[in-house]
Image 1 (cartoon, rainbow, N blue to C red):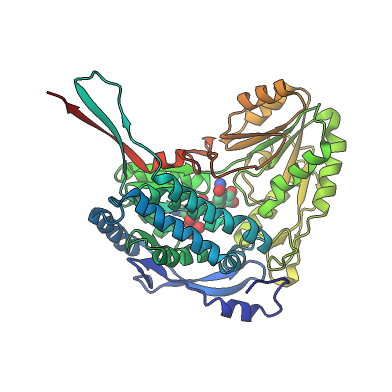
Image 2: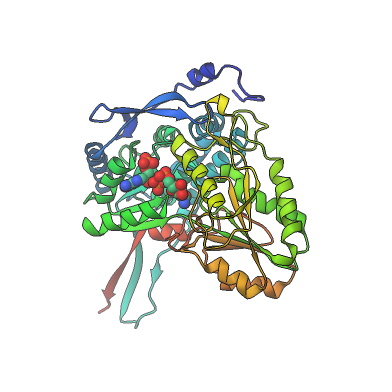
Amino acid sequence: MTLTAAPTDFDELVGSLAIEGRAFVDGAYVAAASGETFECINPSTGRAVARIAACDAEDVDRAVRGARAAFEAGIWSRSAPKQRKRVLTRLAALIEEHAEELALLETLDMGKPISDSRKVDVPLAAECIAYYGEAVDKVYDEVAPTDPSAVVMVLREPLGVVGAVVPWNFPLLMASWKIGPALAAGNSVVLKPAEQSPLTAIRLAALAAEAGVPDGVVQVLPGFGETAGQAIGRHPDVDMVAFTGSTEVGKLFLRYAGESNMKRTALECGGKSPHLILEDCGDLDAAAEAAAWGVFYNQGEVCNAGSRLLVHASRKDEFLERVVRVAEGIRPGNPLDPATQMGPIVDRTQLERVLGYVAAGEEEGARLALGGSRVLEETGGYFVEPTIFDSVSNEMRIAREEIFGPVLSAIAFTDEAEAIRIANDTVYGLAAAVWTDDVSKAHRAARAIRAGVVWVNCFDHGDISAPFGGFKQSGFGRDKSIHALEKYTDVKTVWIALR
Ligand code: NDP
């Protein structure tokens, strides 16, 4: 079934999907050991669409034991890379075969427009799994250039049990960014999706089993961060945690690791990415389009959202006018309608958080140039209109804290040095962009800005072959590209003396 218009019967649509809400452990769907469940709420109506297993420490323990047993048995961890390639390639194909179902689950669960789920999230998830499948039988170990009296092999070995804790903004894609390289490297994975968005991860588990991933190698445990998430972080038999989410929770995972077994921790955390428009920017229309979509895409619920717009003072008014014009064309609406470009905020808590920041911006003296309100309240959904603040100073909370909603803060600067200083005046360092027609200025800015990705004359462009991750408190470790395989392996030196 592919929707060509918004469905008229919501209940019929939900019923047709036969939504699974249980955990997936050792090859089968199971209830939480406690029997507890929680409601999965559709954010565009405020209505429940499924009940989800509320896994806790007992379930984590069981899943880790199963994952460890599978790892030690070697059925996956010691399989030939080309065998893992076959299975991961099959999984990618199954994601494509089930694309419409996964897209509908994603949109029902977290509210992103169905057109984005179809065109972005699901295809990129399949591409990611296929990429790591394809890569794994093409990466070689090394022989160190030592004295010829020895052969010194430098081997990369899987870590063992990897815990993956992921957020709600790109649920299937973030799960794939973790699972793809972790599985390709030979690990077992215990995945905890966010409480707001567990549906596609739960479905992915069955597709992985169907593709041939052995029992125990992919375990999916829906549940809450403070229970299931913390139990993964503290488990003595989890070898590594790969986390995407807030900086605050990222720091907790460092603490959990330090207080348990010093497990490796890779963190992809928050951002407050600067989007710089230098005085000589030639194509203001293209830059305005990028600036608007750079913060309003996915309702602004994007870790690398260009939420700080730094514009040269001499061009600020004409530029902001253009950004406002683009933003006025982005109207929130039913995310199941293929024409909708912006859906609701993920849940009531996040809605209140976003509106709280709008109020803070006004109190701190920023000028509201567009939006600022909840809309479509009669639907029961959590919609917020695109919001733009002008006359923001980098000291205001709306310029310093990650809002994770459709709120843009425009800040004026007077020269390149000041622009770089403001861009770097943040605890974050996930991404940045600079628009200029001068190639020297572009290179200078790209080197001077402390961020994991710097775009020049574009925003949010990416490819599975290009690493993604942060500097500073945006975390460490890279997702995507061959580099992601590094964090799911340990380096072993084998020194063979020749007689
Ligand atoms: P969190 O960082 O809290 O959630 C990310 C993941 O961590 C979820 O799976 C969550 O579980 C889990 N988690 C939460 N608390 C704990 C804990 N104490 N121990 C272990 N795991 C935990 O993000 P939120 O969903 O709370 O969103 C809050 C803010 O975080 C947003 O407004 C945004 O600023 C930021 N954020 C940033 C993201 C990014 O990609 N940079 C992604 C998501 C949020 P559960 O959801 O089930 O509680």
